[in-house]
Amino acid sequence: MSDVETKSKRDIPAGTPAEVWSPAPVPRPLFRRRLRILPLLITLVAIAVAGVLGRAMWNTYMGAPWTRDGTVRVYVVTMAPQVSGQIVQLPVVDNQFVHKDDLLMVIDPTNYKSTALAAQAQLQQAQANLDQAKVNLQRTEIRSPVNGWVTNLLAQLGDYATVGQNKISLVDADSFWVDGYFEETNLDRIRVGDPASVKLMGYSQIVRGHVSSIARGINVANAQPNGEGLAQVNPIFTWVRLAQRIPVRIHIDQVPEGVVLAAGMTATVQIDPRPQQPPK
Image (cartoon, rainbow, N blue to C red; front, side, top):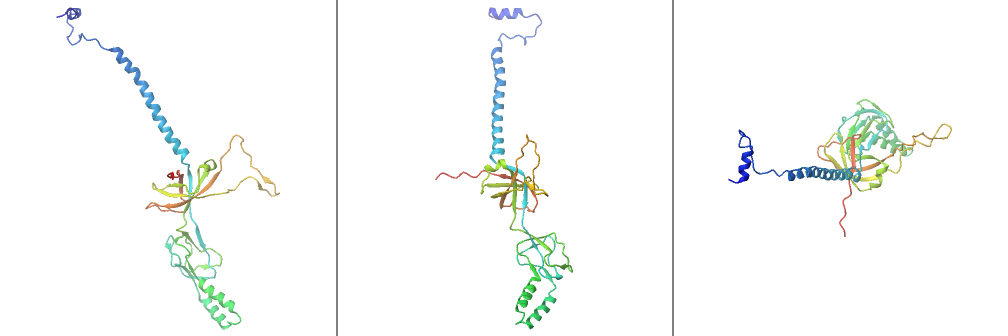
């Protein structure tokens, strides 16, 4: 046994367990240096993650303009009878889909057939009246000019149809589009033909489309003439300047299966970056 080992054991008080004593020293300086490096590594990792997330947020909100203020729009065809009479046939119901030239309503043609016969008796003197009577007879049948849905049908059998008064309306199934109202500060990044993503409030699927046009004018509240012909100018807060919102029309290219479009639905519209063209 060496002198060091003998001295170490000699210096241990009597009754001390053997497991407490260890002749090998603990390398404390190296352990402390590792503890100092650990906070620095954590800080560097946090900075890197924040940089990646910040760049992703910038690309999302600045590179692809979007708005929650979107509305689904559609053309509605209104039809009013051109001859008067009692409705004797009404072969459609509310919310029914009809095709172009389908029969929607029949007005009693009896009086117009008497008119047609009387005009034929006076053919030479009233040829024009005869032609008009024939046209009116054809107009007793109101047919759908488009493919679409009957909407808000209030006409009933026996109702009286008056010339020029709307009796039946159709939602044109082939005319849906979306209007996105973008702030004027975002228009410099929007071009006709840019792809667009439309998220309807009631669906998780994305409706695909593209920018078909940008509105060239909106109503301006200022400069409207009053009763004396003077321009009315609204007061403003000089330190607040609100950006106007300009309608951007989105042509719908693809509607996912199961998505039902209805005019007036709320939509979030995002203009996606146009794909890069390969170099020629």
